[in-house]
Image (cartoon, rainbow, N blue to C red; front, side, top):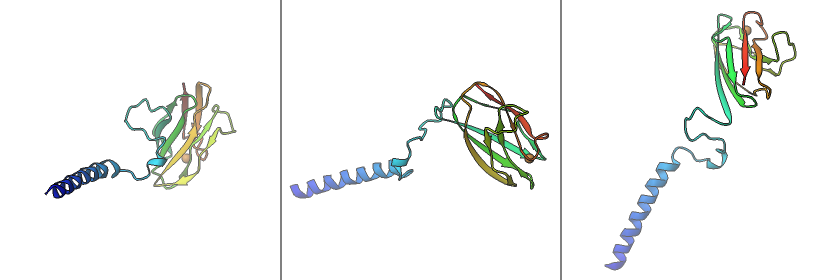
Amino acid sequence: MKPARTTALILALVLVTTLLGGCGGGDDNNKSSTATQSTSASDGAEDEVKLTLVAENTKFDKTTLEAPTGKDVTLTMENKDSVEHTFSLYQSADSTDPLFAGQKFPGPAILTYQFTAPETPGTYHFRCDIHPNAMNGDFVVK
Ligand SMILES: [Cu+2]
């Protein structure tokens, strides 16, 4: 009788372990590649800034974007137009040498750009290189 009880106990432990393990591991198998995962939704995300921009009727939905100095920026741009738009970052409105030049793409589509915000605080300039006069704004770095 004793061996039977021991076996039952072990089975119970295995069951509990499996359940717990299944619960915790169910969401992610590749735990080795999640070094930058943010565990909480705290807006103080240290290593990345997420921005969004919508292009519609040859206009951006924002005239100001903001990012902390030196942070990795993930900019998700939705192009609602059938024509191509792009996002590029410049030192100033009259610069022709982009700090970051985004890929052009026609809509309707969504594209994610990744770049690093400038290290020096200031008001930079972003624009669509195809429609620079109609689609532009301030990129404020602080
Ligand atoms: Cu454009």
